[in-house]
Image (cartoon, rainbow, N blue to C red; front, side):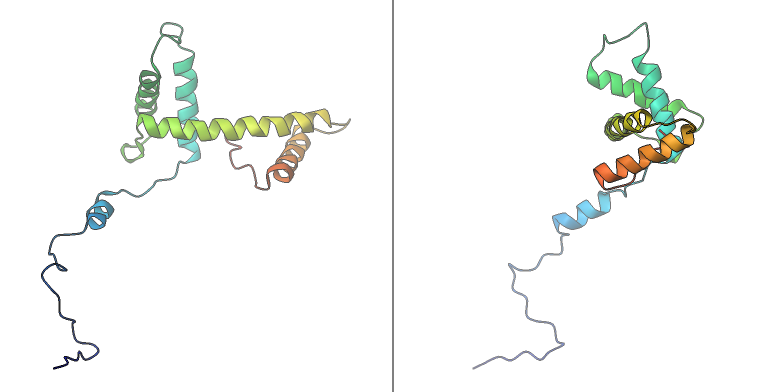
Length: 148
């Protein structure tokens, strides 16, 4: 005897194929938070936190790396420019700092090249425009961290 299933009707489910428990992917998706992009204000507070923490004459470089980034995160969170929903942990601060540092250091090379090409009558705005053009030509994307 051949059993037929009409389209649109539920197919038969066998005991080993069905479970009422959520799949592991479902619970992970519910626990995952959405990525919140950094604002220019947050970047500036992070830069200030890094500078003030790294230049501290009392502790100086006599601290472990994880303690250093914890201090930066505490300084960052203590800023009155950061709201409660904008709090970031030490790992977030470290990752963002790495991105800022790499991008700005790369741009500094373009800025130095533009400064070397400065001619009589050009002002700082002209040099900055040339540096942005050099950066774009070299790296094929715009420099987006002028605020840093």
